[in-house]
Amino acid sequence: MSCKAQTKGEVFMTTDEAVGNITFTPNGNLVYSQHPFFGPENRVMIYDKATKTHQPFPNEVWNTPRETDDNYLSNVLGIRNDENGIVWMLDMAQRNKVTPKIVGWNTTTNSLERIYYIPESAAPKEAQPNDMVVDTKNDYFIIADEGIGNGGDGTKAAFIVVDMKTGKTRRLLEGTRTTLPENNPTIIDGKHLAVDGTDLLIGNDGITADKNFEWIYYGPLNGTKIYRIKTADLVNEALTEEELDSKIETYSEKPNNGGMSIDIAGNIYLTAIETKSVAVVLAKDRSVKTMIEDENLVWPDGVSYNDVDGYMYVSAAQVNKGAAFNDGKNRATKPFYVFRFKPLAEGVPFR
Image 1 (tube, rainbow, N blue to C red):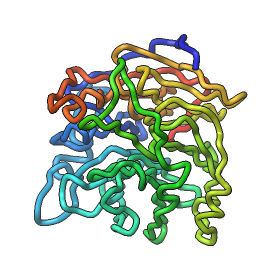
Image 2 (cartoon, one colour; image 1 turned 135 degrees about the horizontal axis):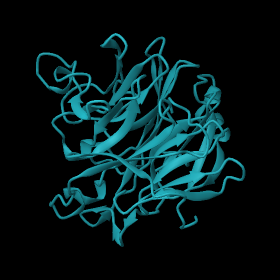
Image 3 (spheres, rainbow, N blue to C red; image 1 turned 135 degrees about the vertical axis):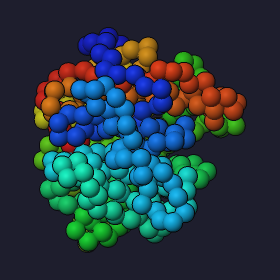
Image 4 (tube, rainbow, N blue to C red; image 1 turned 180 degrees about the vertical axis):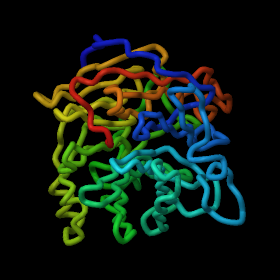
């Protein structure tokens, strides 16, 4: 991968808490998860670009756990919008004894659109549903599960597929060659990302789809390859696991990465967590280049396109500075950054 960045990127905003993943309302306001690794009080926030203020999203009630019901957000990282103005929040649960779910909030009507629950059959205790594609063409949520929940070691990483029409959930390709992490440890500033001396290896993580939802692109965080599979194959219930696996293509090389997005030309943007940068896999030859880099882009996490202003946005979550990786001491420092940059081609807004 080349070392010379195309640009330094532009600081869009700073916050006092770590930003996880990013999405947008139809008018271009930024909605973001506060990274669950740091146990934030508010799970999801919205940044009003006009007033430059941050507020709980969709409101304070949804960010307040309680015993009387489970209509609240427990532990959110993955967050995406769709062309209907709905922001979909992937609640991994874990912090509270509730069922993992996908919560859709309609930003046009300012009301709950729908909740999709993910039962234990699709999300066992080791599951950590991290990010997703909201496929409104084929009517599926396609979720990348890292397999590191509740002490999981990545060996049960998988896909979770949710049918938007029926709510039916399926767990696919658990612990298989393209969802498993490789033994390719994360090393940042010379230090291994490890818990109690053991390298943390994270499975199926970054995920995106092309502009027509024809292909799903994905890969384990700890891994050297991006894979792709046709959406029609992944959601085809008639295929066995073996048949499904045979239809997966190795697409390109990649660094250890978190979030993933794409533009209309098929260039794939991914957060290169070890080098404080965003990499791009060029569609023309599938080579990997550095798009932006910055000393403050520490653990770049979510990357997402805002079609209102034409910028790609990326968060810097400082996950590697958390207490779990630093002998019990949280070494993350304020402020936390969100950068933006112009992609090589117009981005795909809802990926």
